[in-house]
Amino acid sequence: MSVRSLARKIIKKPLNALGLDLVRYNPHTQVGDFIPLAAYGINTVIDVGAHKGEFARMMRKTLPGAQIISFEPLAEAFEGLKSLMKGDLKFEAFNFALGERDGRLEMHKNEWTQSSSLLPMAELHKQVFTYTKNETTEEIEIRRLDDVLRDVTLRPEILVKLDTQGYEDKVILGGGEVISKAKLVVVETSFQTLYEGQPLFDDIYQLLRARGFSYAGNSYQLLSPVDGTIMQVDAVFVRR
Image (cartoon, rainbow, N blue to C red; front, side):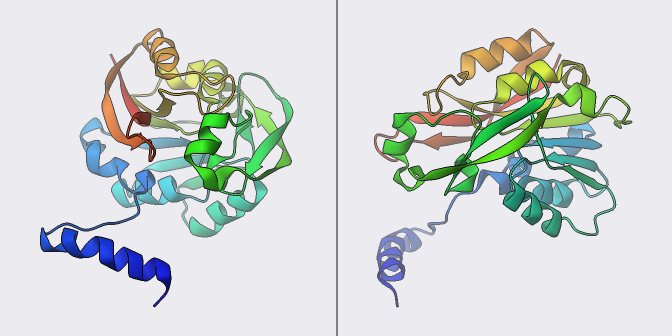
């Protein structure tokens, strides 16, 4: 047995005695448990920041008849996304990022790929999540959501999920027409600066409120492993 496995077993034993368990948390497998998607009549899912398909797969299990459109700019993650969703006739994927204007940019590709961003990582992020210190760069294409989906028929109701590591405001600014048609927007927002120049919760709240949405709670919260403060949430907004 490895040292890690032994330590995990020791930690879990008193929890198990209380009927509890210790598991690695993955929010991309939890959203459907906290948001009654079927009750909102969701038929189209726009998945921005798809990574390797974790959210898309969970949406397919939760909404078997929904149209899913995913966006992932990193080449390696995109291949994983395509592989995971292979054969799904109601799924479509695009290998570029979304923002407020078209172009090409250098993306900070982190060794922990879920932390990759178009924005430089702030020191707080590196200090709290030490496994994210190392990164390279990858040139990626960036386009506006409104332009990409202008001629695509989107069946209502629409769910838009944004998980772009601090670039969420740029996606909203470049996708106002599409987002204004959505019933639900689930957006990863931060209360502490994890990427240089990123919007915080209040900024995202104001952007979406101005577009006709009301804040309806969180599907999960990410706590600092250092001091337990709330760092991020997956915030849920519902069209008024």
